[in-house]
Structure formats: C-alpha cells, structure tokens
Length: 521
Ligand SMILES: *Cc1c(COP(=O)(O)O)cnc(C)c1O
Image (cartoon, rainbow, N blue to C red; front, side, top):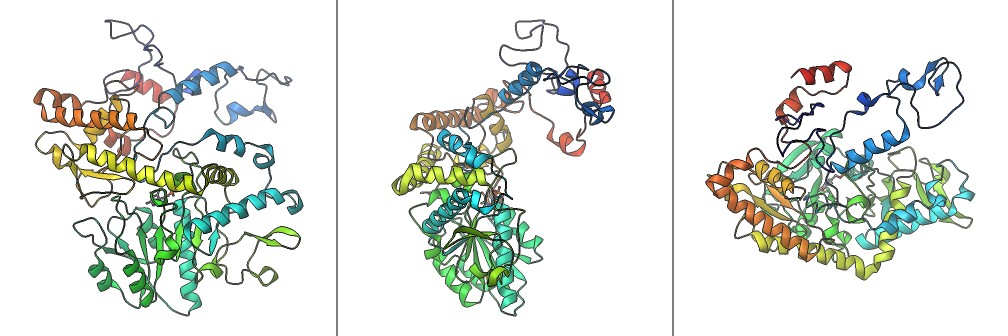
C-alpha cells in the first residue's frame, strides 16, 4: 500500500515494517476480484459444450458476456472471506453508532429464520399452504400493537424511511377523505434527514421548528406554527439528541385541536419498549425499525423492515395487503375494495407482504425475551448510555445536561484550540479497535459525537471505550500527540482516504485501465 492508502500490488520488503508479499500477518493485501480472473476456471464441473467456458448463454460464455471473472471456488471463498475481515462488524467490535441501534443479534433468531418452512416460501403459494407464516405475521402484528398501544399496524414497509412514507401517505389519504387541503408538515430541527425528505417527496412544504436550549422541541415555537394548513408533525421520540420529548402530550393535543396528525419517528423505540406506549401519547402513526429495536442484522444496505402502527383515525387508510383471520383460517386482503374491505386503503407499498425473514427474527426476539426481558433491554440501553455520559462528561463536552435516554450527545467544544476535529478523533478510535460513533449528526450542535452503546454491551467494554475516549481527548491536547490524529488511522488495511476526491472523482467502474492508471501513479 502506498501513502495514499492505495494498493500497489508489488511490494518489496525494506524494513521490519514492510513485507515481501504486502500482507501483514493476517492482514492480507487482496487484488480486485476482476484481476484474479483465470479464464476457464470454475467452481463446478458442468458438461462442456463448445470451448473452455463451462457456462454458456447460446454460444457466448455467460461470465465473459457480463464481464465476470472466472475463478475456482477456493479462490472466490478466500477473496470474500478476507474482504469481510477488513471491516469492523458488530460481531467483532463495539459499534456505538448513535441513531442506529447496532445491537447484538441472537443466533437463535437466525436459526429460526432459516427454517425451510419460512425461508423457502414463495409469496404466490396457495393460502392453504402458508397458514403458519400468516399466523406468524398476525402474531407479530399483535405484539407490535400491544407494545405501542395502537389499534392497527401495516406490516409491509421495507425500512424505516419506507414506513415514514407509508404513515404520511395514510395521513394524506385521511386529509383527502375529509375533503381538506393541508400542505405544511412541521419538522423539528433535530429530525432525522428521512423525515423532511419524506414530507418533501409527498409534495408537502417542510416547516422547521427550532429546539430549546435543552435540546427539545420549543413548544411555544411549535404552537406559533400551527394553522389550518398543517397536515402533520414528524417528531422523533426519544429524539436524536437522545432526549425524551417532555412536552409530547401537549404537542399532540395542540396538533389534534388544529386538525393535524401526529407522525412519530419510532426508530428509537429501543429506549422505551415496555416503558411507554406511543398510543398513550397521542401518536397517530409511527414506524418501528424491526432491524433496530427487534434485533435483525442491518447496515450495508439491508434488509430492513419498518411496520407502521396506526391510530383509529388512520387505520382505514392502511396499505394492502394485510392478513385477516376468518372462519376458514388466515387470509389476505390483497387489493382495495376486496369483499368490501380496505375501501379507503391508499394502495400498495410493496410487491408482497413484507420481509418474512425479519418477521421471524423479530418475533423470535420478542418471545425469547418475554415482556419483562424487553423492558429490561430498554432499561439497560438507557443505563448504558447514561454510564457513558457520566464517564465522559468531565472530559468531553456533553451538549445537554443528563440524564439521557439511549444515546449520549457530545459536541466538539472540548477539542477547541487543538487542531484536532471530530473526524480526526473518530479515525483514531478506529486504530483503538472501536467503530466510531455517529459524527456530525444531529446538526443542532457543532461537531456532534452521538454515542449509542445499546443494551448488549458489557460494563467491561464500556469501561474500555470510556477510558479510550478519555485518553484520546488528553492526547488531542498534548502538542506532540495531536499531530498523529491528523493522519489516523494508522493500523487499518486502508489509511485515511481522500474523501473529497472520492466524492468528486469517484472510480465507479473497474476497467483494466483503472489498475494501470493506479499502478502508474
Ligand atoms: C434509522 C432511522 C431512520 C430510517 O430508518 P431506515 O430503516 O434506515 O430507513 C429514520 N429515523 C431515525 C431517527 C433513524 O434512526
């Protein structure tokens, strides 16, 4: 690897730091898979037809047709296994990403999701052959309604953001049904980016509400913004500063009086499961990120699952399909108006019924914890975050006075005058074996560091994490030490990347010339 962190595939060992191969023990220097192409190699022996390639599309070898390399199985396995070892993961490291709830995923859930009776289902199978799967969806729906105190739930949305779209489409349908036009959606300034994006995507005007000095929605500013054109508020609770919205009932009451609907972003439900039911707070629609609160693996693009619980006012507008239980067992309402049902449904979000594998994992998680276990998980998540806050607040600058909920928010005032920024600190944390916390979000504080330890971290790990951050904060203030931050990470397969070049001149497509270009540089 050269200084910019680019691979140079020819290494000549010079000092004890360098190796002949470019590998460093278990840290292997891998070529791109395209560079490992060995024409004719294949993982399986298929009957040869015309020429060396085993798999053919008409007369053209399929793999060369789509530009894929030919590789023997062991080479392909090693390639991907080594790639996976270059990354941090929740199975390897603490992953304190705020707003993401990167918690442990019990292997039991995986085992159950892989049962052939669930994993091998086809969404178009006859209903009589999938009664168990429909019952599972119905049971999970029951527990989601019970935990939130809400009368209805739409199971199909494929992620939190998709759930927001679903909830807001139900709100729009309800407003249309009343024969009204409401064009404005109120969004607090600490909101997750998906909230204003969802409102804007549906054609609403986004109106930002400022926060108070203690990181919550400014109730007076909110009331000032209410009017007959307000369709909804999109409020996260606990919010993205890790704080419970103290005035939430007043907010709901004032909003309802003005004819608006209360969309709650429930991505942080992990902090309150078994403690508070959003239905009791006046919420009309809320998505639940099964992949955050109920333990399905996430990150790297999916899968996600974002069921949306709905109040009585919004339930008639829920999307199809949904599962109902009748005298002959479970069945699906597939389209609006079917058998006089779902007449007001706003339509369909997704081809089929949702993420079956995630439903299995979520229900397995719930049933293996039990009601007391789910409550305990929330309590432990909040305890862990407060432990981190207490362990760091005299060294880092906490943005708001504690106690916090499930995540602790710091800003970069403690780095003032050191020349070290939030990004540099995060890179140094990677060298110490921790995945960085969420940085620069929420935007309401400068240089944010948002730490969500989740309930699944032990006290030993938290102590180590706290001690590491305390050490790094001291080092930032030490003139000799501060320098090293600027080039961190030092101990990773790739060094610090030029993020501006990566954004402005991305190399999105590999061609033989790409490698030649890199080699020439
Ligand atoms: C994660 C998150 C979302 C979006 O959820 P996805 O499943 O990633 O689409 C929305 N709001 C908040 C507060 C979140 O943390």
